[in-house]
Image (cartoon, rainbow, N blue to C red; front, side):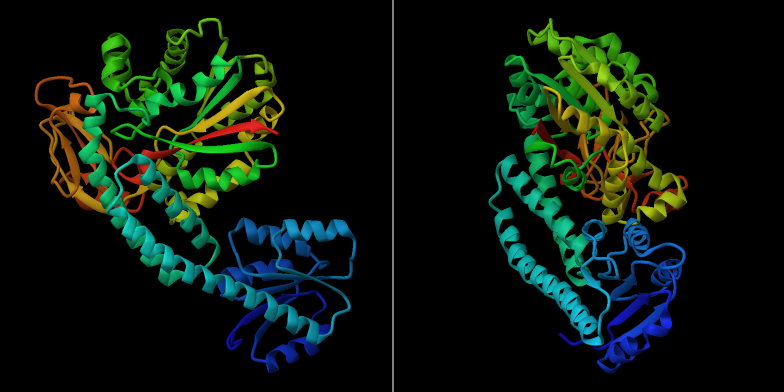
Length: 518
């Protein structure tokens, strides 16, 4: 590996002692920038590109470990070598936990520094090169497999591979390959759209709804309850497969983990899919069985899911679990979660606990509503990082750790995911048309075929038809719906935001993960 133009930043509050090391590295082709504090290191890294950080453990101001922690929290992934006089084991463990790449104990000579720098940089390059070669091979395999997919299980396998690759690209800067990957993801989503459009209504017609979220209870809770096991169902609104994959490593030491999936309903939105989870019914069945509750839910945007507790109790009774105790709790704010955390021990003997967590959904919506959040969630990787940071410090992870010692089997799932939208599609509708970005329903609304699926007969898709000429349109892949009025204003606001309600792997293929305490 050529070391030409590799830039090193070295943070140490005794710069005069670094000069021999600095000169030695510069003679071998490195550029070395020195700073005398952790604060200056952070500021320099924010404002310039470096390939490696050398940092002293003890410095005036913030110490080396604190500096590293702050850099990792800011998602700077550059390699780090820590240099210290301290040989105690606790410090090495702290440094490893802080994601450093190498650890040197003073005194060190210039040759040791050079060897450590080359080792770390070469390792990163080798990792990067290996990732590139492996992806090119996998890319071809995935492309060849798409033509032969004819089951949901096969689509889940493909999506799972794509999610795994997206996480690997987060760790390795592969800007060229990343664009190829994004293009491939979009092409595969187009094929997935065709598969869903071709088959979804047939699943409803023929009763082949086994993998829909309406059967999460039947497939995952009922078998446990039938064996007199206690269960805790956690529905994290808008959680995608990649989100749970960055969350689970934080709790893997507490649980045995089993992965599965379900398919969200069309539209892939909370009023339909989450009610489907708690009722075990399609929207048209809910309307038929509970017409007054359906009308009340749909009369106000803020009341779409007000009967989830009622539906869950009724679902338990319908399946012969009348004697099972039940507790439902929905969290919207941080205070809701903190309140639940403080009282959660009281639920230890409850047979069925149902929790709804709204944080990820709120975070995604905030991107289009706040410039600050929009900057933070600038791409998929940043969204994953935000979810990881939230979960790591959340009341939810505390509750899960407590559940690990209980008798409850924990099922974590989602009602739908989300997709970052890019392609505006202009539609027309009257004032009664719904306000969704990725789906609309109302009278005589239609979408250009390339932008969305028009459901002229909603019943075929398990949806109520409120009146004559009432229909739905569902956005495909990365399209989103915009009205002619103030078109440019809304395109600017909504483009590259995270939305749901449409047809894509990210929205429809949701995780169903079972946790059993170790």
